[in-house]
Length: 192
Image 1 (cartoon, rainbow, N blue to C red):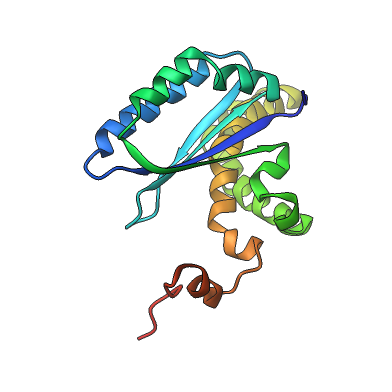
Image 2 (cartoon, helix red, strand yellow):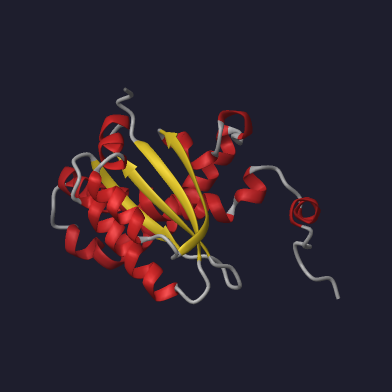
C-alpha cells in the first residue's frame, strides 16, 4: 500500500425532488468519514447554475486508511441509505498532488498545474492574512507560519484547489470553447 495521501472524487446528480434529503445525506457521509483514522478532510462542491451534479472529495492519509473507510459496515449502510437520492454516480481515485489534475495521460504541464494551485492559494492566503494578520503578528515567525499552514492546508486541499482545477479545466486540458460543442452538443456561449 502507498504512503501517499489518496483522494476519492465522487460525482452525484441529485434525483428530482430530493435536494434536501441529498444534502442531509451528504453531511452525514462527511461526518462518518471524519470518524475514521487517516481522514484528512472532505468537501462538497456545489454545481453551477442549471446543473445538479455535486462533486464530493474525500481525502485519506494513505490507501490503507481509505480502504478501511471504503469497506466499513458504516459506510455501506450510509450508501444504502442514499439509494434513490442520486443518479449517475461515478468515482475517481488519485494519489498525491496529481489527484487534482487527472490521469497521467491527460495531465496538463507542470507550469499549468502551478498556476492553478497559485490561483487558489493567493486569494485565500491574502484573505487569511487580512483577517488574522494583526492578531498573529505578535507571534514568532515559526508559530505564525505553523498556525497559518495548519489552518489553510486542509481548506486548500479540500475546497479551493479542487475548485480552481474544475473552473480552469478547459485551459488545463487545452480545450478551446468550440471543443465544448463537440463534447456536449452545446456552445460554450450564446452568440447573438
